[in-house]
Length: 176
Image (cartoon, rainbow, N blue to C red; front, side, top):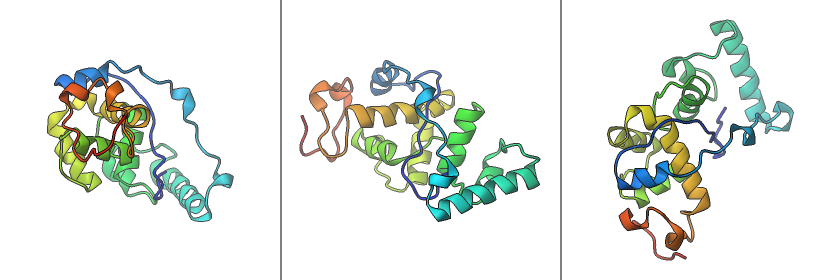
């Protein structure tokens, strides 16, 4: 569950989006699912732990113990916002309900000139017409991984970036 943290990211796989930048993103290696595991509730902050317990109780009581496969039903659960719902639907069920927008996806979408929006929901809706629906789940993972590995916030490594020839470098003032 995402209760205000910026840790939500995970990995899945299909095709790339269209265009030169997305072709380079598609060439990035597909990471393993083994690196992300559920954090024990006991180690969570008290409010997040409470939210997780209540969400689990609601899933049992209202959905027969099955995690819903519907965006509206997921976002009706305590502590589940649009980003978390898209992660669950895309990664657990393979349903491309939307594009997950975390800090990396938001930053890179702007830096690559794909949108000028700053609100995550507006960024998601701006990206959807640019990326084929079947690539929505992977697209956010490509941007997240690229943002961590090459295009970090403070000093992106533009000299090592496969997207450099296609990148307008919006907002980049210092790079390696």
